[in-house]
Length: 419
Image (cartoon, helix red, strand yellow):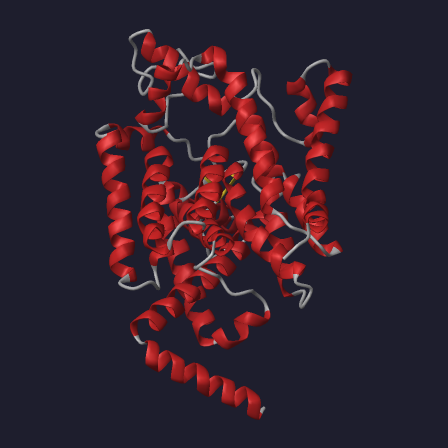
């Protein structure tokens, strides 16, 4: 266990990253006269007014209060966007939220994000310190903060929720975890995939299905007929985004065997291609599973930090397969980076360094569709699919056949001893 002084020192790289961002923005504001233009010093394509994604909600509340439907009316939004969040966010009007509180809400989310980074990362060695610093100052994190995107709130709730649940008595953990997943799904849909955390427990498959079913039912009850509308209102863009669609689009421009028209004219072609890659990745990793530990740490499903990494991998793989998500959603990989930093923190191996660097390169983002960046996007997806998929299979086998699993593990240990 870390002493108080050691715990503080381990948080210094994350704190240094936050101070660096604030310093650059302060200097930029002084030089350029406003904060929006200061963001461009950090390569973030800022919009005026700030916190554009926060304003999607707050201006839609104004629209609703004016008797109009923000799902179909564009005139209330500063950029003439249609509202594309679940209806529950509009209930914030009962708390006094309007467009006048946009800056306040955006700032609170930014403070939450900073607090989460300081809480999450513990760096001891120089490699882990640099990984932490560049994770906190990554383009994806900055993009999320500048836009005031609500993924920051979802990510914060996921982190603090998992750590809080970890402190509860064992009988309470499963119900609380199911409740947390349900709440997050109602707010943003995609956290439903965090239900994979139940895999490997007693009756794990049933619990996973129950958690997912409960979450989707809660989403349908709170969103109703608006669910399809909000999904159709959500933009899908190959620029400043990651996922199957920009990946295959970039590949088709360089690989003669792939046709751009296939992915442009068939909306599900990229998702099908991503699923095929995921299956092949898991299959290959299963065959060479005994070598996977040389390159990646084990995923711990039983403690908060491990669960956070599993959740981040599940969300990343899920939204990659869906097609395209703006780069700010890569903030969920911070949980994975924290696990890799912890592995480096132990100082026993540098196996985590290479994957951590690859994830950081992905989180650095691009302002345009880039072949090299999409190569990294695809590599991270392949690694994530193999890592998460084999871990889930491993957990399922262990839960379904514990005696067989134990005898196999014993045989492996004997073989290793003989070697």
